[in-house]
Image (cartoon, rainbow, N blue to C red; front, top):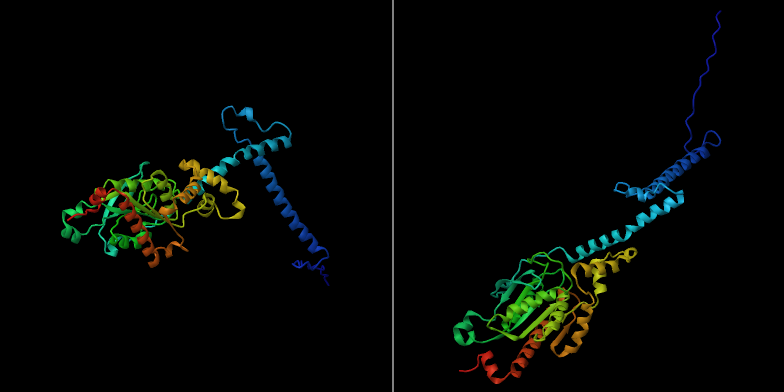
Length: 367
């Protein structure tokens, strides 16, 4: 009778994921996870220290004078950290420049409507500013064919008052289209430019009225070259930054008859915060740098916007201030009548103050 050797069946029980099984198994698994996390953190810290102690000038000629491998580890770490901190102002300035470019080059908005959509004849004209920026504009003469046929050569010798309509930042000239027909019917020559960087004008940075004042000046110069425009009866209507541009242009040209300003900007710091600098509070430190970069990039003194606002207080008689809740509510029926009445009154007052011989010549009086 043969004897069989006893067989041992060895089996392994699966580990309990909740720490069951052998006593202490859960503690060991938690310890392993903690050790893995600590190893990962340690490796990350080592890489950070290695980066800080790396000499970025090692590839440059004469880099041996800037060796960062000498000295104690603490000294090497401090020198490496100072290397990096030296580039922080550069990165800050580049960031501010990026925000300024983005804020002063908003996406252009092209409107499809023009004065012909409200039944008014117009000419498409081009003009150049003193800083060589090309602008497109709608030129709406006050004369109609019926008037020319009726009065013939008398109406051709008549000089009419004119109005320049200046739209807001990041808007288009269609913003002021509701005023074109009423002013034309009231006997005004109307000029509606597309300000720099907006609509069909060539690409240029928008400066909230600072450089746009040159656009307004170019419009005034164009009107004064027209024989049928009275050079001393030119008024300006501006919205937002267009109002600021009108104020600054009138400061340099005292012959501007009157202005109608709707919601001009009060403070350059508010503009930088609203349109240029980042909105997040933790990036508020970038805002002064954005203002500095804005002034450097466009070679302007941003505080001139505030000065122009104060200067208008001295010309209250020739300035009509409007305050709409938004640009969408501008040029309501009541406002249109108010604007027409104000401009007509100022234009007639200017005409009556001139010598009678000049009045007859400009107004085409006589049989």
